[in-house]
Image (cartoon, rainbow, N blue to C red; front, side):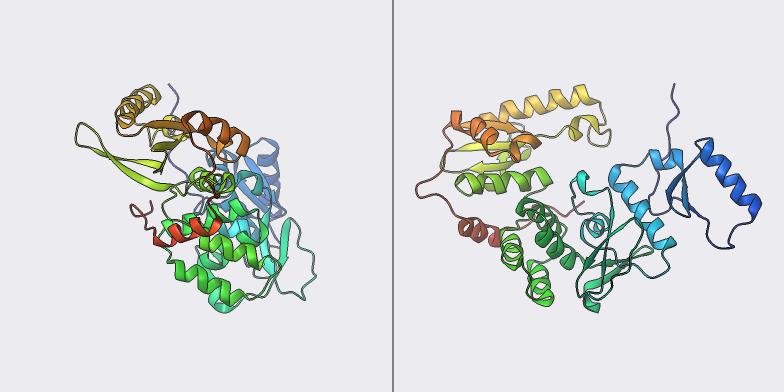
Length: 334
């Protein structure tokens, strides 16, 4: 029987630092031997971590450890920003973005920083917060930076999650004003206007963007449905005119022990029973995964057989923004 490993906190995982005269020659030799034996992992010059503990972390948690290592080994204070700041704030980030630590430096700073991606922007004191031992752009400024530096749907993922976490829309709007004009100012404004706290996952955010691009009617998010047992459940999205429910599926709710404590098999059975009852309350119910939420052709192929097509005239971005402004979170962010 495999031992159960205790959870590892990425904010507390010890980072061994080797810089200047902070370590004796004996300690340095011991660290080198442990690296060769596979006990320690080199994160960056002068920073090491215990390999087993680090390996127990998710990619997002590992990124937190890299942020801490970068800050600890830097000869000047770092302002963590963009995708790295999003991770520190707990906002969703595509894992393809986690390969580098992102920091913002003054516009006239051209110094090279090993292993870091630098962004040159002016940042006001009001746009900076401290998280643990890191100095990070505020959540409003972070959403703005992602909206300006990412495709529209990535910005929406971050903005939706910020609203879901309880950040008032006015905070995001104030961040736009404080940051001033940028080349991507129009996209940033559209992301903030489009953001909706009813999207409870990154996949649901992507779904809404794709529905808008298909010209489909604005969905009602987290539509309540009362089952025969009296239990209330919520559809991820409901298209009123078509009377079609959309559920966004992910593997996590079946494979994550915290979300499926009775096992994946039991979770599948319970989900199937729930679905059978939900189908009684709508004309049709479809399921989409991560791939379909971001692929217009694939999503259209799922929706067309149940009669969901672009409206005439096509539903616009403005209509989605109007609905989003009236939306409120269904439950506190966890």
